[in-house]
Amino acid sequence: MPGITTAHGTGNHTIVSQEEWTTARVDLLKAEKELTKLSDDVTQKRQQLPWVKIGKDYQFNTDAGNSMLAELFKGRSQLLIYHFMFGPDFDAGCPHCSAIADGFNGIYTHLANHDLMLWAVSRAPLEKLNAFKKRMQWTFPWASSFNSDFNYDFNVSFTPEQQRSGNVEYNYNQGNVHSKQSEINSNDTAPEEGKKIAATTGADWATYTQEAPGMSAFALHEGTVYHTYSAYARGMDGLWNIYQWLDRAPLGRNESGMWMRRHDEYDEPLQNNSKDCCH
Image (cartoon, rainbow, N blue to C red; front, side, top):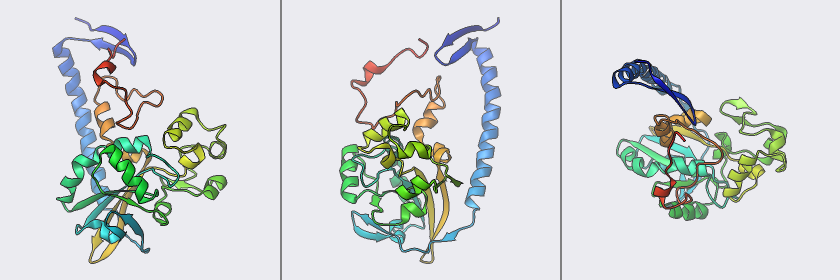
């Protein structure tokens, strides 16, 4: 019997029998397996990248006091840093960074017991980070790179001079930032959604766009720290557990407007927020 087509918010879908669905699902499974194999190949290439010796003595403010980059390893040989968008003039962390950081609590202990430390690093002073960390009920380690070149050297923070000149490198492209320079320089021409997101951090658009998200990996070998990998923008998609779940949901990411918030800013009670996805 031919399938019945029905429409909902994301387009047309066909209603079929269980047998027809299974046939379509098995066909999709072939593509998923191909993607998994390709992902394995990319992972191998990622781990085969050459290393770069860290030549600066970066210092960070941590709960244990001033720490060098090598001390963030805490006796492990590997270190992952999430470049969390929280500038010195922010009152709260970026809502999108906050969403990805919600997953850190559940994994950093496992990683620490697998020879790998996971830290968040931001330019805001440690006092601001700790206050926001307490609000979010997070326990993972978070360090401040305030008064350090660390964020600038890893292309996740930009000076006003860089913004004005367009001399910004992000995701391995010159000038590749998440807004046009004309929009950065004038809050009047900034994108409305961008201004809304910036406002949730207590910053204007120009200040907000001085920070960008990313992650970097490091290795410690015979007392020397090496930079092994960095990723930015959609290169971090696989680390966003929210998106991994949404990509498997009937409506996918289904993003419209500023939907993602810090976890304590959603309307309550949660059960009143449900709705039929097809109407």
